[in-house]
Length: 436
Ligand SMILES: O=C(O)CCC(=O)C(=O)O
Ligand SMILES: [Fe+2]
Image 1 (cartoon, helix red, strand yellow):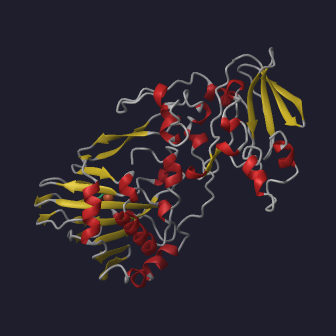
Image 2: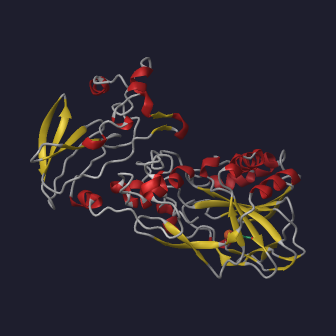
Image 3: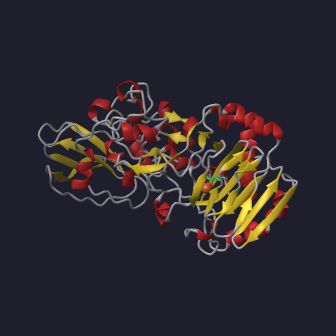
């Protein structure tokens, strides 16, 4: 609707009695993420604010891809307010700064032909976009990346529409095909602001202590017994926290186990590849797709969420583990290091470990600094924190642990890792390292 921009300036997007303005004008009302529409894409749904660009299923609007600027010549920058006002020119390799606020819209035109190259809308209060060398650099030399472990092709996947429902992988590997070159850099794509995460941390200083103190009461309806193995740091077990039927359903859904991997080096855009590691000789399977829709999965996750008092958005997907005789995981910590605080999801704050089998001999979870070993018992859970109560961004070094080699029998288990902030949103955007 041609009036959208005008209506948005009149404040009608936020007028609660005028829901239709937001519905018809998602772009002008800032429901969409920042994006632009190059001239050649101007007819696409997401460039035209209308109901068709409204994608309920994925939690709102998806208009999140800026387009690769198809020129390297001088670009004129116009501020768009009723009329276009020229505010500056961007010479190749020059720096041009423009201070801008929420709802400002700019047009970028080729200085010679005056062809429209891009329309850029600012969102959120006081975002300052500096169109400078770094910005232009991020658009330059942008190609789709080869990806060894992936059989598909950007040429097929982008036209099929994968850029929108699968923005993380597609932005990193198919940035050119998805017109997402400016989002390749982790510093741009992975901030809480860009991801529209304004979530509070799950723990404030001191909360962790209280969470464990009240835990017995909360767990009663799910577990036949909570046992406190240590209070400093807190380490507790729960008997019969998961039922036979639930274990059977979960394990039946995960037939394909692979050699366990550790996180390798991240590529230039923040995506890590898993590497086979001698530290971890077990097999791993992630609960994905249909597994995550299973009633038992949902029930177990909600149960853990209530016990630890953290919303399930903060959880990684359940990771199943299988250890044969001789297999183990050497001493490590589940929070990698202080750098985990730089991720939008923050560090892992808890591990809720589920034993899905008994083990005839060996296979204990051993807290190496505490001289404490936990014997696997089918259906039970083991919970420990990775961070300090007084400062939930700091690793609690006392919860270093290892999985002792299985000596007889087989060990089946599962990790549920809980983060300080929402994990699902940044994970969707390939902002959690990718190899986890
Ligand atoms: O298998 C175990 O007992 C512990 C596994 C573990 O520490 C992990 O997967 O991070
Ligand atoms: Fe661990």
